[in-house]
Image (cartoon, rainbow, N blue to C red; front, side, top):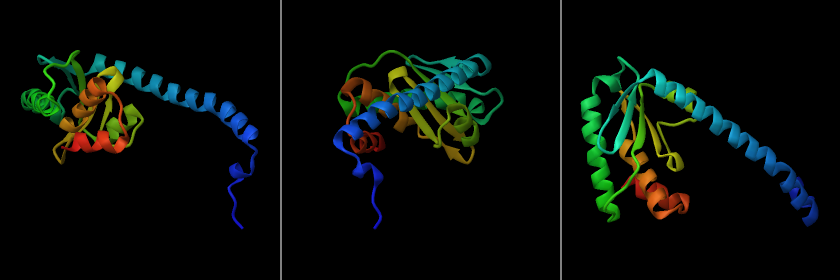
Length: 165
């Protein structure tokens, strides 16, 4: 018979286990966050920076995103208007930092993630893979920033569902 060893613990042992493991898990999470912030600081210093009315955009010099930066600047402002209209919200500030990575490998290495886009709502930061063969989830990730910061956190399926609209 296959049993879950955690289920064999008494309630008090379970509480002690959780109390002991929680700081370890928080430490891992904090370490990952510190690494990401350090890596983004380096990217901010090394990459080309542009601004629109509501966004600060970063592109690796001479990359595909850099070559279409005017399109990206117009698109991201358009997405902002569309999302806020859908949310029936008038305004959002501060500016959102947007990092356009030329490859999934580069983004995943720098941000310690495995995906094509990510939003750090608390920090007003979005990152996307934007390559010739793949155009990132710009509108999707910006939707996360707005919905979480204007409406608060919801169940994951609600946040993802809204961001997919």
